[in-house]
Length: 95
Length: 256
Image 1 (cartoon, helix red, strand yellow):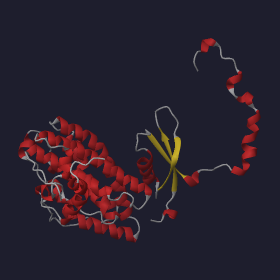
Image 2 (tube, rainbow over the protein chains, first blue to last red; image 1 turned 90 degrees about the vertical axis):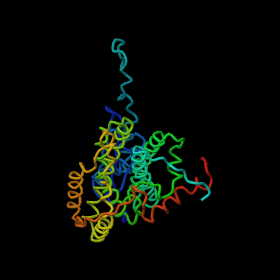
Image 3 (cartoon, rainbow over the protein chains, first blue to last red; image 1 turned 90 degrees about the horizontal axis):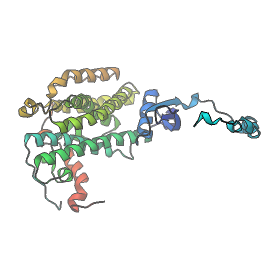
């Protein structure tokens, strides 16, 4: 089989209601229908999911690893963005 | 072969349950033969998954057949210690894997029949058979969807895949009629089993729709092989059983 020409799909699984779909891996398949079946067969054999998404890998726009400094380092010095600085009144209870 | 075969007292219920168990085991074994050899890693897992579904169905059915017989046999005895003439599976399901198109066509024909069959069997007056049916019909629904999607892509794919898919359909077609073998009248009258003839119209619609979308020709032939239900098998089953039973026949009772 011509693996090189078979499109790659990214697989996302939602394990429970209320959770977000999480990236699980990828499969090769000729089209979306077969990609969904391949994702089901490869990634949900042990009860991992209730819902599946497949997305063409080439539809994903990714950040450039070379831009890592510009993109992500400036946040390291802004600890005040974490909500831990705020006092939570006792009456609020568990959040 | 070092160990002797068991003899099974085939009451109508035992025989019926054995037929379905043998169907599931033989087809499940055929699918397991693909493990490590499928056209892609994804399909390798897909075929093995379907094989495991069928093995699970076979185990439930053998356990029930053994219980119904009440002669002290268990599911392993029934699977490993009967020779080909004692096997009651459909001839369709023992046909060799051939190329991928043969495997998919075999799966599709069987799933197009057995999926509505299990769904109808959910209403069986036999509670054990109804429970097995309720589990099996979800599994076979996926087998039908998966094999049908492949039929369409092989048939409506390249010239090569279309040629292979048509060859597979033509070769397996004469084995499809045996699926409609009438059931035991007493079991039918008691509501334990359904008459497969009642499923023929919907089966024909499913097969025609998929073959049509696959741009494959529906063979015109009406002559059909039979004999599997009576233990008259093609030469392929003996070879399958020789491999499957080898260990238990050589080392009776061996465990992992």
